Image (cartoon, rainbow, N blue to C red; front, side, top):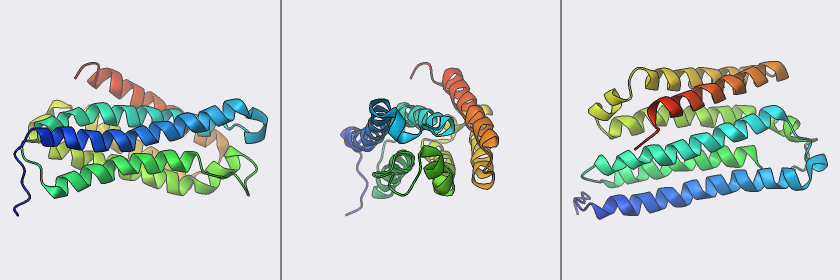
Length: 195
């Protein structure tokens, strides 16, 4: 079997799988925020953590929107299908790293986030590296249509996350998440007000 399927309904199938994974990602974030709202004293809220929760939410929603352009792929191969599922799964992993199943052994979200920041930021770096590959998969014309701000945004966020791994100081972490949020929001507003 060749593995090439020229049927346009394949995109619908891929979209459903992406939707399930990203739906679980959003669910993880919303459930975590709901737990904080339900028991704010028990969770020791941390502004940097909440900033990255907002960043993750925007990134997942943006990814879901951005993946609409996969309809431009006429032929789907298993490798492309597996790549897209893995890419969506990186988003779920980032959301899961922000809200663990248990906070046992941690004094609050600051303690938890700082102890797992290398995992979180490493995962976010992977997301933006894979984003380059995903965009290239949609074609050179699509890649070029995003303008110079697209690679600059990705490289800037990769650099910010690299700094996030290295720096532990709360003020530095707050600046990093603020810059990441501004960058992501600006890019979404500039590029994707319509499909």
